Image (tube, rainbow, N blue to C red; front, top):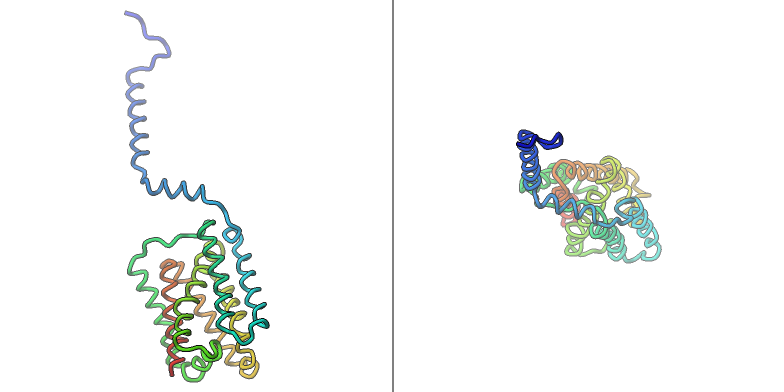
Length: 250
């Protein structure tokens, strides 16, 4: 019988090698195909400047809002549509071409939390500030709008644009409290030129509105962090409906 060569593997080594290879194959096959697909897509996805530099999109939208103020002094609806459209456009481009987080399948309890948080914040403001502050403020923020147009802006246009940009694009790259401050700054730049005369005459009311905007925006980023993007979206819809739309009906 021929002696074994020094480099020939021993039977035990062969068994261990075979078992190691089988374990590696089993571990590889146990990996979820969906996870591998998502990883490959994330690596192959091209980068869009709005995704890597979200403040770039914020500056564009804010500059558009300020620039349209003297150009469209009597067309508030068109100015709002173009300004919020700029926010939504930057967000959609980032969603299509960048690395913005996708909205996955949401659990009903997360959506329920969004409704609950909106009610908990909106009802006290509706009860205590509706007659003297919220009603007049809504009529000045959205002057001359019909109830149908106002409902469309508060329930569809505004929540869609601001949720996608601030909570979808911006919050994934900046601290939550900073996103809340930037969203409040955006609201001030957008709304205050429309009601500038009222603000100059009633500075206390302007301060209450700023506090209200800050509280709502901080709530939205909190809900986004706690329950997800769709929950934050629902929360803003509920807050807008309770705080701004219902007082406008009285």
